[in-house]
Amino acid sequence: MPRLFVTFEGGEGSGKTTQLARLAERLRSTGLDPVLTREPGGTPLAEGVRSLLLDSALDTDPMAEVFLMEAARADLVAKVIRPALEAGRVVLCDRYADSTLAYQGGGRGIDLELLRVLNRAATSGLVPDLTLLFDVDPKIGLSRRGAEGRTNRLDREPLAFHERARSQFLTLARAEPERWTVLDAGSALEPLAERIWARFQEVAQALRR
Image 1 (tube, rainbow, N blue to C red):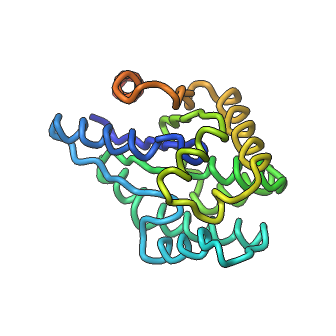
Image 2: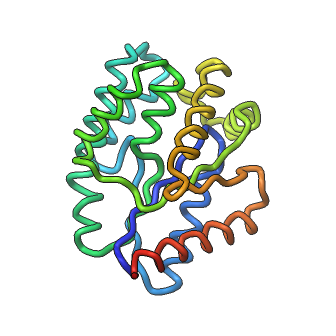
């Protein structure tokens, strides 16, 4: 198995975190030891940033939000993702740079080209081999989050914010179909897991060539 960097993207309540765990378990059953991480988070510094970003008591300026995200991302890439890939590991990351383009770009209306420049700086140009987009109607996703009782500051943004983020995710996927795979997040768990496994194997085989 070649080193492989897979990111899981999607709106709130899309089920991406559940499917990431299922893929990780399947990889372990084959003898692999994938690295699991998340954004923002994955290092002590980035987890501290995560607490700030998701704190409903804080009213964060949009650009301050972006710089906090990028600082957390830079630390995660430098300390976790890049070392794991250099060691030949499979890395599964719950959100990555595309979430900034969707949420801060699409959702908040910050210039996409500026965000792309900041993303490249924070990641030193590291791009995923495969990005899985768990597409769901924001009304359904937010309803799921509410039922789980785990809402945070971003969950409480207006529905229109989440609809803009979803639209931007889909635009990104259309622009890079070789990297992105769009999945119906309303599908049953097992068929969805099988599709993810099949796509993962396709990408892994292509990288071996």
